[in-house]
Image (cartoon, rainbow, N blue to C red):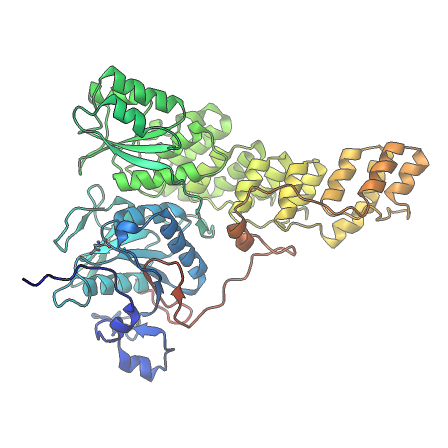
Length: 600
Ligand SMILES: NC(=O)C[C@H](N)C(=O)O
């Protein structure tokens, strides 16, 4: 008897695609003298009337080593997100070829990692490999390329058998059929038949102009626990032990579970320790409700309703929410209960963010969250002022909620101040860290020409000054010149804290004031020995900034240069790249600047 070979990932996808006329038009590539690594689809049929000769061009980045998707982890998905980030400016959209077994997990994780997504990201794959005679790989890839190349669907999507699903709503339901995925609670965002039909009312809208933020600090200590009849409390206790920080608990029916006191006690004890337990039904269809006593008992033990989220989405969301820096336990619970990326059917308005309602600012944010789609303009107009107020008050949760709402946290309020100005003025180191992690302009000027650094100096907020300086903030030549008079004034008042703040911000303590005298002259003339000693010890001493709680490699790339402005985008590369330590193939249709591709 002959044994069929087992299936393992195969390399060299680009070479295979080159031989398939439906996925590459070699004649057109030659005529247009396309670069060697560039593939081009045949003309779309039916052609777009506005631009009949438009083609989708794409390059393939093949990650190494290639994995069966059963071996994928958050580490590899972070790499995919970072590849997208690196090439974000150069391409119109992105297609990620991924094994089907864990594709719904991957799509869910990527949907949370990629914040402010304004381009199409589509995961696709195949039940049967592309080289087999009867396979689904070719059609899936072609459909994904056409959608990513010709439309803007600013979400992480999953394309399979002619249907484009929201990635965090999809789940694999069949091991053999080509219709391997379904989306039980949300119809497809698009379907491809004789025509392409986009369900625009379902596609999430891009709000604000915030730039792409990649959340790579996803929490790994999260797990999935499926309840079954008679599950012993002792087993649950062992499962919930540290270092676990979050669990998705798959329950019966509409969120019900055993009501045995010992089991409930284990859940309660874990929740009281700070473990986040999200209750998701193991049914394919329907949501967690409070219809049954057996469900409310679980809620009473401290579990959080996962509503109609898939387990894949809930696990990804837990990992994301637990990875966000600086939030309280209640803040994390609130985010879990709220729709962040279209992963759950939003709860009714009055159920929204109960703890946000405890402050005036929180009430404002909660009201914004409850506004209908039509009120987007109002929301966009109010958001910068609320964000500045939240930043000044150090309200990380309100700020995070605004970011989740799509607010651009670099936008200025009516006074021309950004949230970073407000946080610096308020001495809110936690908020400053969060905003810097998002790569916001560190040297922005408000309407009076003031920078966050100057506001922090005026407030003598040393922690914030250190953070800003470490992120590249610096005093302008004018501020440095004006500092002389201010240093003299501080010296005359024996304000050591103020002097120290200016020194920390990079001021030259010898800078003369308006009358030509330096701060040291002023202190000596006043006979203030403490100030004299301070100035003498600080002058010429190198400034050591405090350790900055930013992820070093990511920040090194995102933070502005000392002179201000954002780092330059990577130069477009036209060579095919093999990614060391990578994982899957990633295809990116060419950018609009090279070939206009949007055909609405
Ligand atoms: N055909 C497939 O995609 C299944 C394969 N085991 C994978 O998930 O990588």
